[in-house]
Length: 193
Image (cartoon, rainbow, N blue to C red):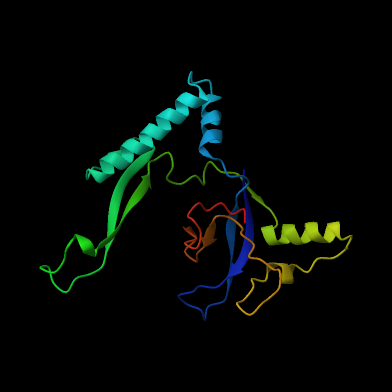
């Protein structure tokens, strides 16, 4: 079950257009490698948690090794791993060198089993993390009302209040209907802030 909250958001490319409602997924729990391996082992595949962890760890090492050898890794329905490079431009072809290359990034393109899970997913609308936190705080203080607008207010640089961003979902909705990873995080998109 995918839990989500809804928000009003404007189109940053066309700020004059009225805001529209968008969904953000809520992350229930973050699973580390150990928990994920234990889950895989519980499917009676004949492999222990330790064996699964060893295989996945070795797979990661081998993927990196082969990507650094210039290869693309196709793992069937799972997807394709490849690399991209980011660099600073040089004034001419003659002046370009390896020093212009600033990063080598791993790209992952999901296979058919991972392309779009919307037909397999079930959805449930829930309160935002900020709303949930405000409600819990009010209940603990024996209050009967909650100011949701104040709870959802994101603090500005001048704001000294204790309000914190809601941290809903790992992704930020965009007006195109999809979502984009929040580049202000470590990339995990955990949504549990």
